[in-house]
Length: 230
Image 1 (cartoon, rainbow, N blue to C red):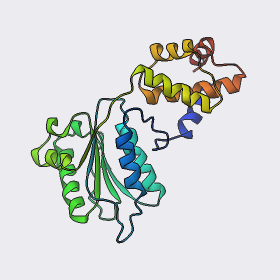
Image 2: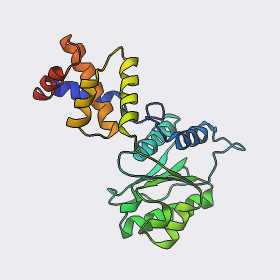
Image 3: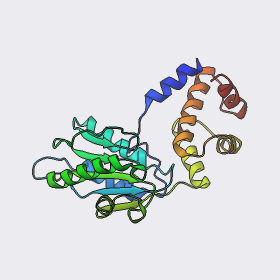
């Protein structure tokens, strides 16, 4: 039962701009919402100026890139996607609505070559590049021609939420579901599980589903029982 619940929760939601926990990163979110809101038609094309997001793990940069990819594909458009796990990059396609590159700080030589090729072609075709990495452009250990291109457009430094902000987001999200999270439950969540906000929100999803399924309030014993049955 618990495994099915985990599966259902995993399929229920994907990264979107609307479920991004913004915290101190409103400027980056506003920028991407504005960019996506441009219709992309002749004469009113989306801005081709590149955007680079950087920050530590858990700050939401991959969430934002995947949210943009999902939004564009939901509009019937295709995107180029390259990350550090891509073994063989696709050939550049001029019909792509955007080029998205994640974890650029970890690109190997072949991935850097593909990224540079995509970047040059995207500039020629007036297609935007949205990229993300853990370091500011100047500190990336990449080939010079790629590093400088990543840094010449819009650059946003993302920050992770502190504990107070995490608690505010968790409490607000719980309230929208009609759930009251006690301080003790939030203490338990923050000390016993990953402090990454995305993981905490997934945990809240699971807790909500399990509480509804068992007709019990969300308490520390309920969370322990849920995890024991996982």
